[in-house]
Image (cartoon, rainbow, N blue to C red; front, side, top):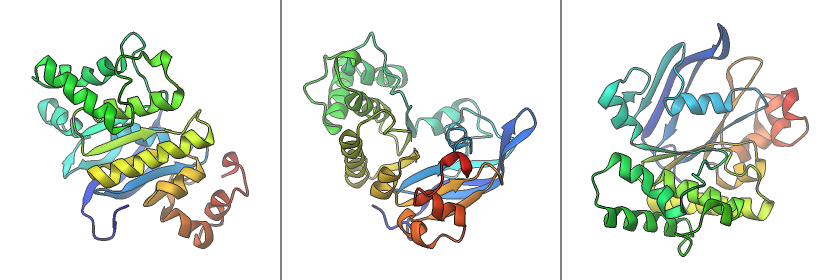
Length: 258
């Protein structure tokens, strides 16, 4: 965990408005993410958590606003500048998105083949190291279908780390996992954050994971199109000003009611 009050900003979202077909999903939203923290984006169903993630990783373009990664605007960047910004981040999608026809080692080598000039022996060495960092040493030659769902998530994180990004984006990392496997994944996230100083940006609605790993959260609201809570989730559980936020953290209403 990082002391977020003193940490420098690594991502700044300024006055972001976005939506589909002329309708708004977010309306003039601003927040920042500090270097080295575990930052969680949460909210009720349909609030735009995954849409926000897609904006942050440059897949969607907003109606207006800025998304600065280390001071550079990914919204306006083009060509080699945009590629240089995006090479500072890694993404783990909800399904893991591993290529089923490739071994785990080959999956992790893929970004190295595309974005570096390393010789094959070096690529294999780097990929093996990334698998070791997520606890999958000895599984280099396994196919994704031969390992568990939790191991697939770990392998996807290893691939996201292939280019040594400063920021890792995880989309619903605990989805489909049993409680024990989910807790083990939480511990891996904390270990990577603490040992390597990686900034994590995580979309999830799993409260147990949120309480375990989050330095700070923002909570998006479908009705207002705004951020209705920001801060330490353990504090917000008891002291949030917004009553819907307190109910969410205390499981007193379903997410669809928020």
